[in-house]
Image (cartoon, rainbow, N blue to C red; front, side):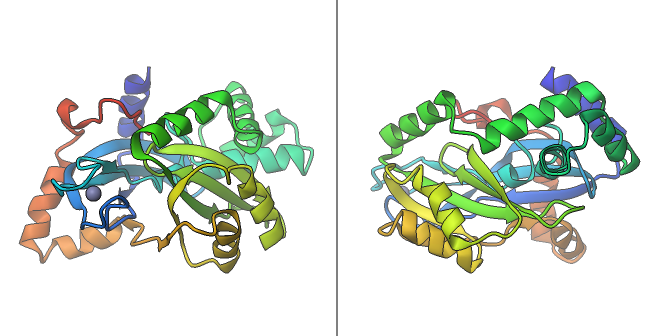
Length: 283
Ligand SMILES: [Zn+2]
């Protein structure tokens, strides 16, 4: 099902913009060694966003330090979670738009469907309903499935790496904050705020404060940093490294043979089956 959808979408949006993400971490949280970039993508898909179709792919990094207690740990490009939920072919901005228009502006789903169609999003009413339910699940209490995933990650990695980032969906002033766990590539929760403040963000994160946290990752937004410090005062914080290699990489490409070679690997298609992590769900 997923394969068919991906195939169809790839053909339908040949001109989609490309964004290739790499893991935001530079060093292993267990041993501090520099991480090695994996040669292939660990995920790729084409999604519909309010800004148009977007092709996105992620490259993981891996700890190769033989002395490390967790040598072989892969750090995925979890920032893709901010753009689209795992297995979804719609952007998170579309979910946020549907949720906000329905909850806040009391628009019916069929009206929202029409608005989205006018904005160039191909979607039927049934899928608007499905995305609305996903939006509610994202904003609701963390489900048992997610708890299980986080517990299993704690077991394997002796802790979690939480990342928080915000996106501003087009068409209204609210911000959607997303909490994701990097080692398992899990989207944990989200909160949508019209006038975000540190207190709201801290209260939201405190739901998860009992988890052992190896590190937290965010961009430079002060409210987020303060909330992360309040929820996990002892966790080292890493600032997000470069978010993606997208059009920039394409421009550099013309002059850089080495990079061109590397990009050829990227453009070669989906990663080999053997490169997919065996025990970690793709996202
Ligand atoms: Zn390590």
